[in-house]
Length: 217
Image (cartoon, rainbow, N blue to C red; front, top):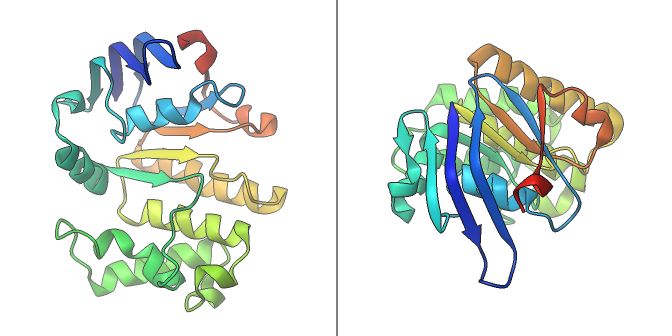
């Protein structure tokens, strides 16, 4: 479960801010975060995942109040507990598809890279139609293919919490639906909350609940 209490985040006194008195996201719940551009959708996602820290208030992940954590502790928590699909993919140009998927196991000693993990990475790539492109580098991939690599990387560690910032924004309808099927199935099978920023009205209907960030401005 994720709980937010009396949260305030601001970029400056006279600039953008979010104010959330209370918010709760249950285990296994699938939540779409919506609103016009510039209203704080990505900011909310980054707060919930510990990338940003609020000015005041609490964000509780499971039984951990992550607002009491330092930057490194929040980073370690993301490595262990969270899967994130970033809007800009965050792939490394000098790594091929397989190594980009395996990145969480190469950047921290928290995870041990084993043969079974490599096999899981290959299976995830196959699930999203990338099995024949494991040796390709990001500059040789389409935007949609890069996005699918990012989805595979997010799922590799079997996270307890899933966050996506427009995770299907660069996919055609067929691949969009297929990737969302994979994310929804993962959430169902593991009882992991799934929180997704999206502009896609067709996708919103699939979620259990919609949060419009305009109510927090």
